[in-house]
Structure formats: C-alpha cells, structure tokens
Length: 310
Image (cartoon, rainbow, N blue to C red; front, side, top):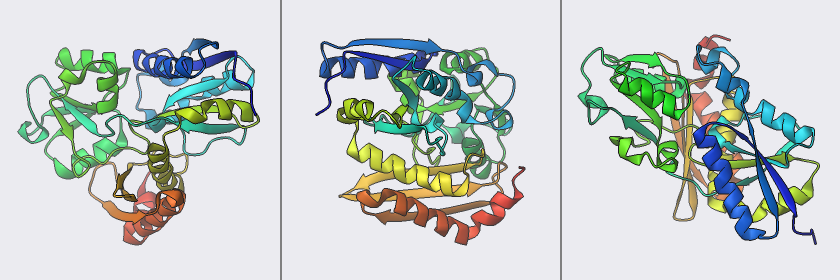
C-alpha cells in the first residue's frame, strides 16, 4: 500500500483560469490528505507570451504545457494541472495523464454585448475566436460573418470585446463558469452548432510515468465517465491530426450506459467538412475513437487533411 503524501507541488500556468483550476485540485487533494502540505508553482509558458499570432502558426497548444512538464522532469513539481483541450494528443513517454476530473459544461459559449445569438449578427459582423475548429464551423454555417483571430487569456479576450474590437466572441463555457463569469454568456452553443474540442471542459492531471505513487495519490480525483469521454475524443484527434493544428471537433457523452461520440474534420474556411458519429461501450473508449476516425476518413477526412497547409 502506498503511503499518503506529505508534500505535493502543483505546476500551473499563471492565468486566472489556470490558477483557479490548480486551486480546485489543491482543495480536493487537501480534503483527501488533510496532513499534506500542498503548494502551487505558478509559471508563464510560451503560449502565454506569444499573443500576436494564431496558435496554429506558432506551434499549437503544446506551447501551454512544455514548461510545466519541465518542472515535473526536474523535480520542482509533482503534478501539472491542465485544461484537457490544451494537452497535446501525443504525450512524451516520460509523462502520463493520471486523472481526469469531473467535467464542467463542455460546450462553446456565445458572448456579445450587442446580440443575443449568432444568427442575429448582421453580414460582416466580426466574431473573435482563437480556434480553427470554431472558425471552420462558423464559416460553414454563417459564411456572411467576418471571423477574426482572438488571442490572450480570458480576461484579455473579454476586454477586447468590451472595447468594441468584436461584435461577439466564442469562448469555452467552462472557463467563464469557473471564474464566476457565466453572466457574460448570451447563449451556450449546442454541439450541433459548435462541436466542442477534444477534452473541452475537463481538467487533466499530468505526472511523471515513472512515479506510480503520484498516480495512486491522484486516483480518487479521476471521474470514470469524464475519463472515458475524453479518451474517446482524444483518440479521434490523435488518429487524424496527431500533433498538427487541424479544424477538428470530437465530443463524447454518456447516454444510458453507452458512449455516444461525434466528430468532424473541416477546411478552415468551412467549405468542406466530414462528419460522423458512433456509439460504443465506455470501457472501449479508444477503440470507439479510432473507429470514428476511420469513418471520418471514409467520408472525406483524408482529402481534407491533405488539402490543409503543412
């Protein structure tokens, strides 16, 4: 039996949302291990520093985790807490995802000071998003809107909206809810309108693969349903996109004991899109994800991926 921890250091980005997430995990661990001293090591990542270019052009979402992983490797931290949608689909063999906590609302949110819904925006209305996935779906359904790049942390993005730079912005509903900003949400976009990113709304805990005691400490924080959904979603993304930035959505939910999985791959301009869905057993989540990826290939994903800039 593995002894309870007496000291845990959590590596976290220093954005307000990232620190909320780290503090949430800290509080849950403190309840489990009341005698344990738990610290948060705040860090600034390259993804936080490069704000003048879209993520897809500077290396993708892995830019948000590399510094945290370095802290795990050199022993400054025991775990790192991430938004699962920011975690690269391929982890280096030194690392392991040891827990996925319960999921917040996984959908995208429409935020605007002028309009109550996307279909109220006039032609040429400016919608801000940092995501190729959101951009492709917006352009496919609302080709008359102007989609503009939006970088920065959550507070920065809201500030840009409030300054009038955008008519509306699309954000993850989970982040707004976690920071007490749910009142800014004008509409939660259903999956049929904006299919979420793999892992959206879920928190992941990463540790060194060579530290089984850390995995054991974190096991009580793992939510079986959220973990199965996220594993299925990430399998789709890993099979089709690998480490590349691709307009891709994957979303799984439990329906009466079964895992229902939807996915799409598209061109950024929304002119071509392959969509599919599958259902299967939660304990075969990765297989379900791979089967969905194959179905998407049959429906044209291969040609879409080949047409994307590399």
